[in-house]
Amino acid sequence: MIRVFFVKMPLIPSFQFMNKKDFLHEIQADSDLTTLEETLNWIRNNKFSFETQLEECGALLFSNLPVEEEGDFDNFVSAFKYETFTYEESLSNAVRINKTNKVFTANEAPKEIEIFLHHEMAQTPTYPKYIFFFCKSAALKGGQTPLCRSDNLYKEILKEDEGLLDEFEKHGVIYNSLMSNGDELVSGQGRSWQKTLGVQSKKEAEIKLENLDYSWDWIEGDNLSVTTRTFRAIKELKDGNKSFFNQVLAASLGWKKNSDNDISPVRFGNGEEICDSNLQMISDIAQSLTLLRNWKDKDILLIDNYRIMHGRKPFSGEKNREVLVSLTA
Image: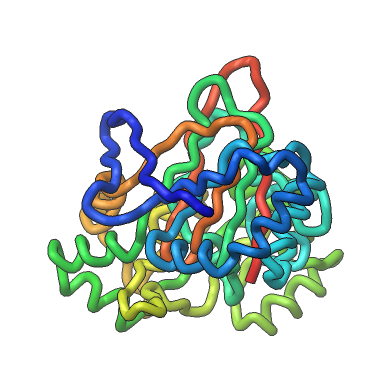
C-alpha cells in the first residue's frame, strides 16, 4: 500500500507553496521496508503507480528508506529500469564528480553560488526525462533545491503577455556560453571545453562543434565562446499542456557574458535580444510559483525534467552538503 499526501510546510518569504494544484507528492513507504532489497522490490511492484503520480504532479519525494550510500542510490535508480543518461557523454556545462557510472554530484560550484531555475540540459540537443536526487548529507543552512512547474509558469506568462510567448514559440532561443580551458570550480557552469565536448584538442573541438551546427570563437587563454543553434523554448507535454522548457532564467541570471563581443547568454532564435523587463517578469512569476523545501538526510527526490525546473540555493554551516544526482532518458 502506498500512501500519498501533500507536503505541508511553513511559508518562506518570496516563495509560495503550490496549494491550487498537485505539485510535490511524498511517497510514504510501509514501515516494514528495512532492507535495500525489500525497497527495490517495492519500487518494481509500484513503478506504474509512481509514474502515474509523477505525470500528474511532476515531483515525488521518498523519505526514510534504507538508502545510505551512492551504491544504494544507484540500485534505487536502476530498479526503475530507465535508460541511463551519463554525465561524461552529455554536453552539461556543470562540473560534477562521478560516484558510479550513473551517479554523480549535483554541482561542484562553491556553496555561496546560486544556481538558478532551469530544465536540465535544455540548452543542448539531448536532455534527460527524469532526474533523481539523493540527499546524502543536508546543509545546516540553505542548500535547498527549488522547484517550479513550467506548465504553470507557461499559463501565468500567457496571462501576462501572450505576445511574448508567441515570440518564444515562433523563434525559439539560442544560447552563448563560455567554456574554460580546464575546469573552473568557481562557477556553476565551469566544466571545461575538453570535458564538455569530450575532446582533447582545439581541432577536435571545432569538428565536434561543426557537427552540432554551433558557431564558436577562441578567446583569451584558449577559452571558448560557443553559440548554439536554435532550440525550442516551449515543449508540449503528454497531457496537452505546454511547458516553458528552456534555460532562459539560468542563462540570463547566472551565466557569464562574453566581454569580447557583449553577446547575451540567451537570445531569441532570430538573434533579437530578450528585453530585461520581460526577463524580470518571467523571473518574478517563476519565483511566485516556486516550492522551496529543506533537504533531510536520505531524502530522494524524483522529478519530471520536462515539467519541473530546479536550481540550488546557496548554503552554509560546518556540515557538508552532499546531494547526488542520476539522470535517465
